Image (cartoon, rainbow, N blue to C red):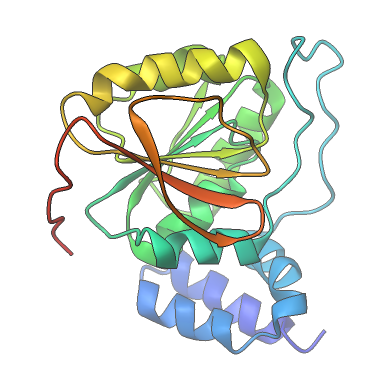
Length: 220
């Protein structure tokens, strides 16, 4: 694996406090696209996918990591900035939230119902000595509305049907106070009058913007 040395250098820089988002992006771009997911897993020290809780609530989808290609497209097209708060609705072991934080400097919050995955996400933050990517245990369909500081809410097929409708209903009051973005991969959002499709940079990836407030110029 020609990218192993690169991944080890990047992980060391995160742990010793010398990490910079621009350097992380430069290192990522030097890795062949087909190898970027494996590279990221090495950077984060992630192994095989953990088993899902056999009592996973009805309507929830077993954990699968979102491909780097979709996360990178999301970051670039929104674009995600250091001033944002990225909320991963159904965050698993914290892979996507940590990636976005390392790539942009944005704070990232993971919402996850499976306790063992939350523990792994917290262990990941502890190993990398990263404090701005916490993981919160609980039903993401219920918790999303309690994160009013969120500016970007991300869903990678965590659930559908009534649970998805509940998430959007919880986000609507936040959207009435300021513009937010709801980004989803392989999720068909139900019709929602306060969201408009802003862009779809890749097949399966959609970026929606709330319409209650005029889009404000965000600080970089």
